[in-house]
Amino acid sequence: MNVYLDMFDIDEMGESPIVPHKGASERFNAHCMYLFRYLLLADRVYMQGSAALKSNIIYRTYIQFKECFEKDEMSSRTPIASFVLREACEGYYDYFRLREQELLRNCETNNAEFYSYKLNNAKNISVKLDNSLQNVDYKRRERSVDKKFRYLVKTTFLDENFCKKHEIDSKTQHLSVDLCDNLDLFQTYRLLHRLGLFENKNVSHAIREKYYISNAFGVSSATTLAMDNIHLNYITVNYLFGAIGLSMATTPLSLLNSSSIFKIRRLQSFSKLKKIYFSKDSPTEINLLIQMLDNTRKSSGKYTALWKRSPQTFLSGFFEDLSELGVLPKFVAMPLYDWVIKYISDHEVIELIDIVKEFSRDISKIRSGN
Image 1 (cartoon, rainbow, N blue to C red):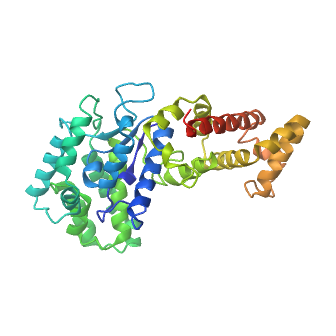
Image 2 (cartoon, rainbow, N blue to C red; image 1 turned 90 degrees about the vertical axis):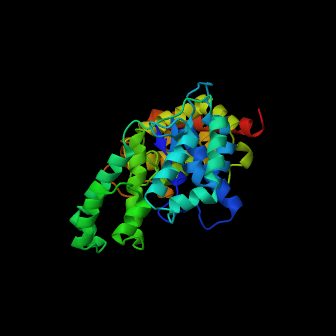
Image 3 (cartoon, one colour; image 1 turned 180 degrees about the horizontal axis):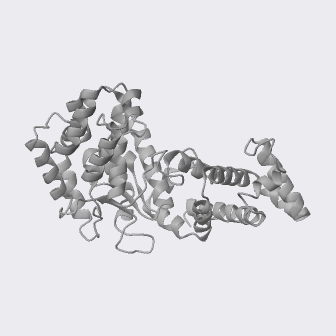
């Protein structure tokens, strides 16, 4: 499953949405962790072509994981991560020049996107990207982002409930539909100002999300938005990595590099964890699995002892612990055990404990440099 990193683009205010009010060091670490998790979890990771041109922190994050933009764990020329280019662009400098000309042609020099390019010296960054990635197969859009974005925005403003909820009058509603059809440079910042809705934060954010979804559509991927995908949304992925011992607090900076990514992606234990995770079809199943992973990692010694006594003793103790943690319902129409095995089989619970123990050992070896 492929993912488009929507949080690696500026928001409607021209800011990075990842911990925007923290210091530079904390923001850099948070960007690295965000990319680190998806480099491990997704098959391929895509970002907007201009992401590193508009943000110095994203460019620094790229440098931190540079090899992942050059190859995958099997040394294929198709890299794990890519800044996605337009279909007609030869490279990142070409992309930058085309976009700059579009903004200038439409008199959008007082624009958050244009300002971000100037602030971060996008011209020089684009040349550096071209030089460092010249032997890489660039990822290009497969479908039109512009058409998808126009369509999603139009259907949003045609939704009477949306307009009523956000107090959008009929005149603004009709203007929005007209702009979706006829505006030459169709861009979030420009559209919101033309509609007089830039100060309406809820509407601004909703429209920007449509842009993220459109970019994901362009490369046949999911976003990390909470409402978009049950496996790859940002909140669930945070919980998942915390449950397997790779939270923000427990992951050292020494692990945040391409070498570690390649090693972990090659681990059999991690491949098994991913296979089980992506086999779950509902939020209930995923949440139960994450809690089981967390509980198993913290109490594996206890469960090993219970297993030696008997499989029944082990399963009873395991499910009892989950119930006390509030993971399982206290009262269900059927026996608790029967409720659990609707989602997780006996065999899977036993397999999960072995996988978590194996993965913990593997990560310890990678942390120690082996």
